[in-house]
Structures are given as C-alpha cells and as structure tokens.
Amino acid sequence: MRAALRASGLRSYWLRQYACLHTAQARTAAEAHVTGTLNTLPLPYRAAYALTLRLLPAAFLLVSGRGLRKATAAEGRRGMQRLAALPGFGDVVRASTALALLGALDGVPGRQPAPFRGADR
Image (cartoon, rainbow, N blue to C red; front, side, top):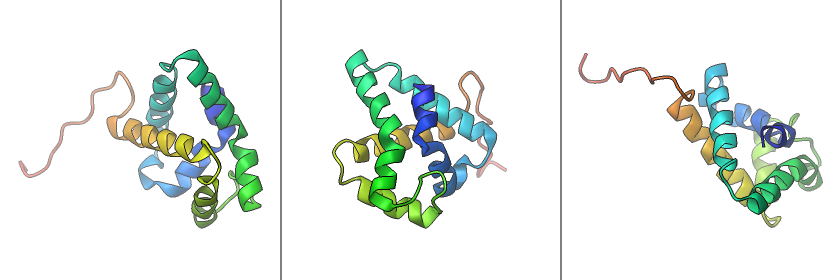
C-alpha cells in the first residue's frame, strides 16, 4: 500500500495544501497512518484502493491538464474538485487525506505526544 500511496502523488499535494504536514515527522506519521489503516481493509477493497491510488496521477492529468506533483496549490484544489466527479476518486482522495491529517495530528506511532501546555502556564 505504501508504494501505491507514493505513486499517487498525494503526498506532494498534501504538502502544498496543509501546513501541518510541512515537517518530516508529520509526513512520516501521516503516511504511516494512511498505509496502516488501509492495510487493515479486506483484500478486495485494499486492491481496489491501491489501483485507484495508482491511477490517480493519470486521472488528475486528464481532468486538469496538469500533473499532480507539479500543480500549484490552487491548481491542485481545482483539479481535485474536478477529479471528485469521477467515480471513486473523490472518495479515495477525501478518505486518504482525512487519514493523513489524523496521522499527523496523532504523531509517529510508538512515540508519546508532547504534553499539552495550554492555560496551565
């Protein structure tokens, strides 16, 4: 699943869209959460998801006329809006993005998050 995610170009798209993924630690946690979650799917779903991820760059190019990895943040948003009209692609992008952002929020697996230092200071 990791190879399919990397082939999709979503990681570069996320980097341009979400400031919370600008650190290497956040990107590592995001990718680990996406792949870890997707690896728990039943085999037919996992295979369909992986295929959709691998087809994502071609589908994005088809609807936007621009490669996903080279698209600016604005071009990426417009292209993803158009891509959502193709069956399955919108769902895969939304679900993968949500998993990535949750992973970045939770941190790297096996590490304790830093304690919250809010109003108690």
